[in-house]
Length: 94
Image 1 (cartoon, rainbow, N blue to C red):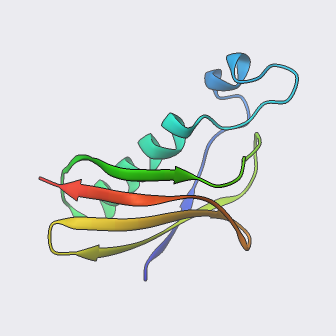
Image 2: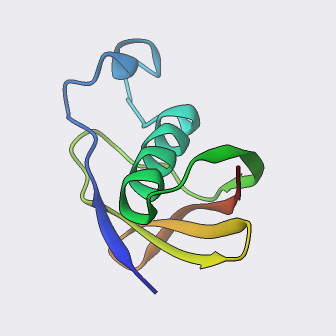
C-alpha cells in the first residue's frame, strides 16, 4: 500500500475560521489534499468522494500521511498522524 506525505501548512488560511482558539484541519482540506495526491501519484482523475469518515482531529503543522489502495475504479484511503487514524474513505475514479 503506497504511503505519501500529506502536507498542510501551519499557516493555511482555513485555520483562521476553523477554530481560532483551537485550530484543526477542516475535513474538506484533508479530502482536497488526498484527491490531489492520489491523482498525481496514480495519473487518474477522481470523480467524487464515495465515503469519508473523520476519526480524530489534526492540528496545524501536524505530520500527516496518506495511505491508499487502488482497486479497479476506486481508491480506498486513510489519513494518519503517526499511528492515529485521522480520516478514511473511498474515492471513485473517472
